[in-house]
Length: 201
Image: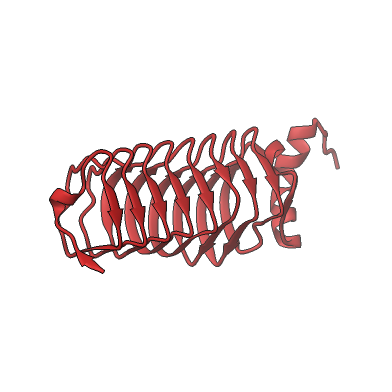
């Protein structure tokens, strides 16, 4: 593993087997960069731009940012552990065999994304936006989710039983998800409203 510095993050960078540890990476532009078998640990990523970046076999540990841009990015065999991010803007991205473990993300924007396999474990999520996304094999384990948006999402083999949901939008996009009996009871009013049922005792 090669030690990296902030200046290694640049547009179209080819980063192979590099370790970013304890660095201030504020505002760096890594658009279209390729991370392969890299480690990013205890770094300040405020304002970092990852538009179109490819993140492969890479770990992100204890990183922090108020805002992190990653639209149209690719995350494959990547793990984010104990991150603290205000807004991770990753619309139109692709996630394959990825994991997010622990930490907090106030807004995880996966609108119009393609998720082939994503595991969320022990994460506190303010907003999880899956609107217009194609999601297959999403597993949520022991996560607080303040708001989930599945508007016009296409879900398959998704396990939401470990999500403590507070607000749900786009209930019509939940088809293909697995929930608990208690979650179903909580969702009943939304489901009734969605199909136009009138409940009159």
